[in-house]
Image 1 (cartoon, rainbow, N blue to C red):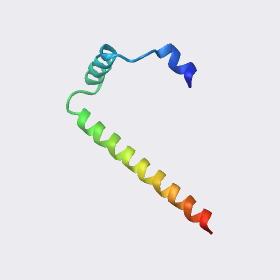
Image 2: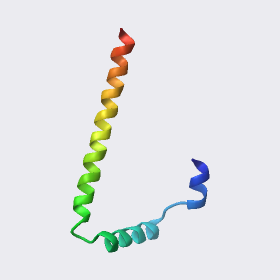
Image 3: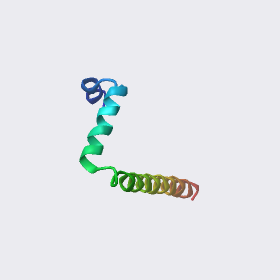
Image 4: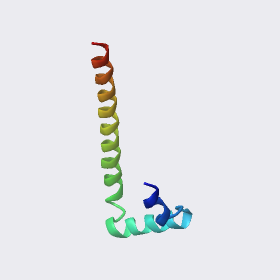
Length: 63
């Protein structure tokens, strides 16, 4: 993991601004909220699934 981090360096404010501009150019302003909603729901689903998995392990350990 650190091998990937070293070439990338630290992401500063100018890099973040550049990434935001590129995303706006690629997807357009109307598509971004839709993409963020999808990303948010995907993260929520992943978090819920990981919680369910950890509770399933606790139940199995008690048996």
